[in-house]
Image 1 (cartoon, one colour):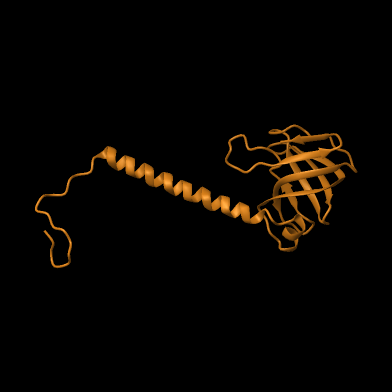
Image 2 (image 1 turned 30 degrees about the vertical axis):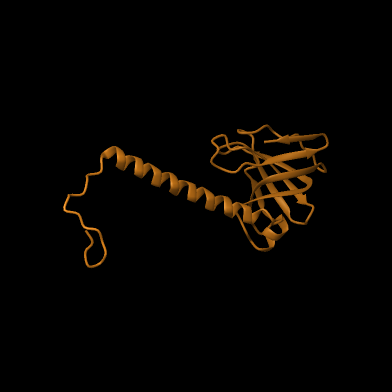
Length: 159
């Protein structure tokens, strides 16, 4: 039966939703929220892929996954605090100098020497000296985008 607002009325009481139905609905809602969040994160990552290290440096942007290439200019002592990191400086082909911090607890040490050409994918963090590149390895838990270091002579990728 329709009332004055064209809303169906019923003389029978509303049915009670069971706990299992409520749990199923809650699970679906959480799954949709998670999927929407991941989609938004993926869209944000796609937008940053077009930037070069030079552009990110000039625009003072951080927390971007970027790829760059250049030559090793200096090997630095390993960082031994917390997870161990191999550290070195590269002069990128497009200009800025980067400190690369490569986690050697999660990835193999890269055999480097000054002058060797490299390609790097990792998370760029801006600083006044050119920037930092880290997350140059896989995330064993799969929660963070991973990167790599490729030496060109002989060709090999370290993740």
